[in-house]
Image (cartoon, rainbow, N blue to C red; front, side, top):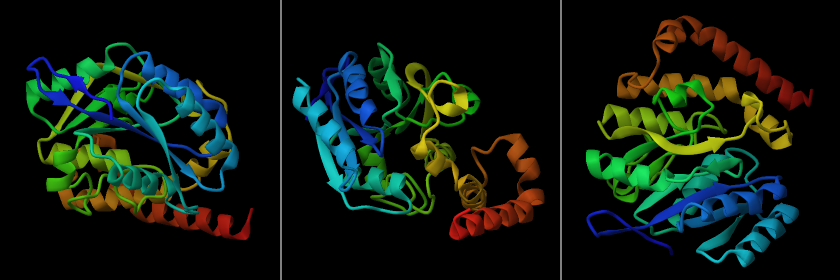
Amino acid sequence: MSSVVSEGGSVLSISVLVPVLGRPQNARPVLESLRSTSDAELVFIVTANDLEELDACRMAVTLDRGSSRTLVVEEWRSHDYPKKMNHAYGETISDWVLLGSDDITFEPGWQDELLRAARATGKSVIGTNDKANRLVMKGIFSTHALVARAYVEEQGGCLEGPGHLVSEVYEHNFPDRELAALAQSRDEWVFAPRAVIRHRHPAFGTAPQDATYEKGREHFLEDQARFWERAEQWGNVGLIPQELQVKDRSKKRTARLAATARARRERGT
């Protein structure tokens, strides 16, 4: 496992968790981008039957001069993203974990900025700037946050409690929102705007649409309804004013739309 040294001389280790699915062409670029800016460990989490992806990740790891590895997991037909994150968290021992993905680019200085924010504030969940999502750029949450292991072990990164990095109640969307919002309610959140990890995504016009993105988008309304409902348990901290205004009013409509989307998937239309 790779490590970095803080200004105070203490050694802090970071593992970058990268769940992957059906995009083998992204494996080597994301590792090369990380390695150009950091010696942090990278952990690919690959579904066992995703053979082309598995080969690409293993090849990237073989060519890497730093610390990286590939974890192979069973096929999870649902809730794949959060399950992979939690599995990888349990397989690492680093002081910090970064919620990564295969469609990100690491800008020089991101690691120093995150560790500087952690030292200056003592916070346990540090948000990075993806230079894409408007809520992320405002510091409301972060798709790719750095999280202290001690925080996860003592409090938990989600409502499930200690030992859980992210919640598996979500199909794909909103585990990152819950992580950030819950941390805010505990005064454990800080946003580091100069820690830039760019997110390439069809929603921002910076990546082509594909089956993996479409799969994640299918359950958006259901995940949103779950997030709004769970947010009440931490006093709705982290919700933006627009959400608070429409949450109760649109709860029934959101549930109805989510049910319709679910029925369409079951019919295969």
